[in-house]
Image (cartoon, rainbow, N blue to C red; front, side, top):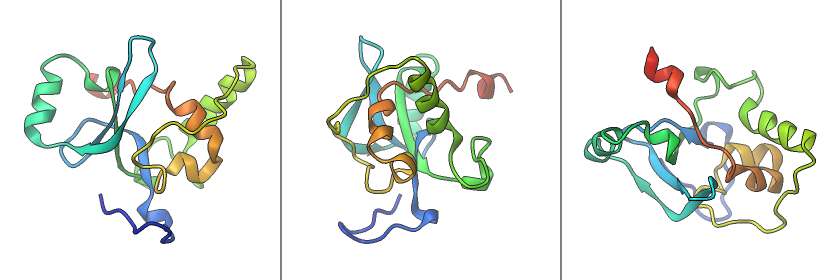
Length: 141
């Protein structure tokens, strides 16, 4: 995943999906902690075939870790036509529960290219640690 230089503008085609599948070429973004929240790495770790095979040998990696990859926009079932629907759904659920959002920005290795951050700003960072990508339906196909 190419990263722009600090301060460089990011186009829509260069956005990063913070809820991708565990696949070669993606990056490890964070790991689910004992409290059920995702703890982001300070630096995203690129995935190779060996990592993916090892992670899959212990069950669905997406239920234990979060991965990032290029945002596919029209190639993704979560794309609404203008934006990613995942973060909108998560923020809507949190609002319905009157859940408090973090006031600080947690460490994030992809914030400057993150699709969710570009759409909703700091609110996305508050909700991000609560999202566990569950690809069990994909695995069943």
